[in-house]
Length: 108
Image (cartoon, rainbow, N blue to C red; front, side, top):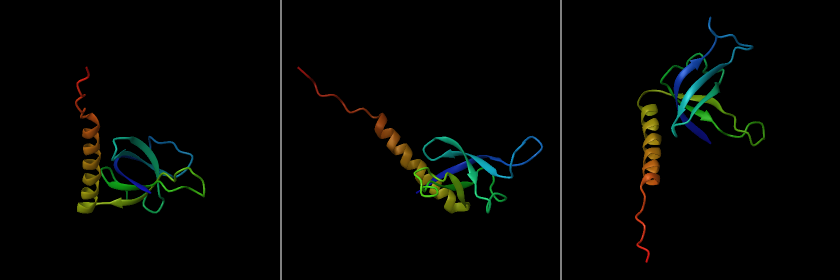
């Protein structure tokens, strides 16, 4: 399973970042309005940018039940925009249905 997110901030090395390793993380707004920070795969870490649409790998890691939680794919251009909008529209529609309260029948 994979989740779609939008990059808010890329966290990598720099003069204001002190790290024990060379990993890159990304702060993401997820399609369901959650805000998370996850590891970015080494193979794409040098290509990820703010506002990129990404896929986060939620498959189980190493035969455990814990999800991998790693950015594995960057979706740019029209395809990324379309996927992001599809997920957001679906979430908004579900949210609106939860908010709508059905009328209570009159009880005597």
